[in-house]
Amino acid sequence: MRYPTYNLERKLLKQGYCQIVGIDEVGRGALAGPIIAVAAAVQYKIQVTSNKKITNHKFQFPKRVKIRDSKLLSEKVREAMFEELSKKVIWSAGIVTHREIDKFGITRANLLVIKRALKNLEIKPDYLLLDRVYGFKHRLPFQSIIKGDAKVLSISIASILAKVTRDRIMREYHQKYPDYHFNKHKGYGTALHQRCLEKHGACRIHRVSYGLVDQLIS
Image (tube, rainbow, N blue to C red; front, side, top):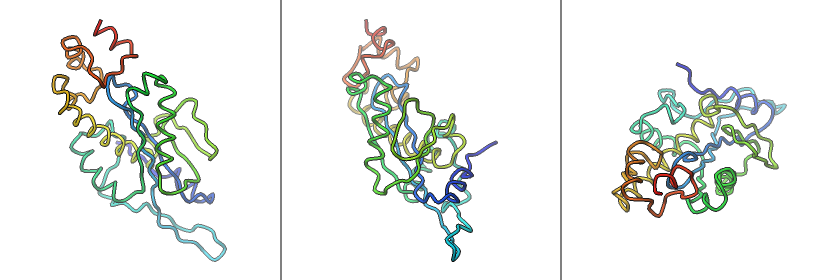
């Protein structure tokens, strides 16, 4: 079983970058609710020689924790990891609502949510690592990596924080709209969710610009 590594972060540290930020978003494919992006700055212990060359750098996180792409973890494990990860890294979240998704379209909304997450970050990053995002541009150097959440530690951490943050929002929506069972499917297009849409129509947090939503409520 392969786990994300910080080999890429180690390479960037050797090149002189200090604030390396991993970014991931969740909720793009859901039929309801917001999309959430998290920017996570993993802090490293760095030893520097007299000529300012990095000689050692270690990720400050317990080795017993097996960080993985959030999609490969159970909800219970993600929640437990969230509690510990949120204390170990500097991170911020951005949110784009269902209304904004309907207004701007998902591609533009996806870029917007990443910018919001970065804007909310309390440190100034000097290098960005993203799970694959098409059309992303930034003044800072960055890499957009295919399946980055499964390969790169910083991105994987961001994916866990983002997933748990959004899941908690959707569980709150379940309290407001219990007929749709958002606590179970988190707004994604499962068979249960589709049956709810056919029976009850769309509620206020559904993305009515999505073809499947329009089809099911017509």
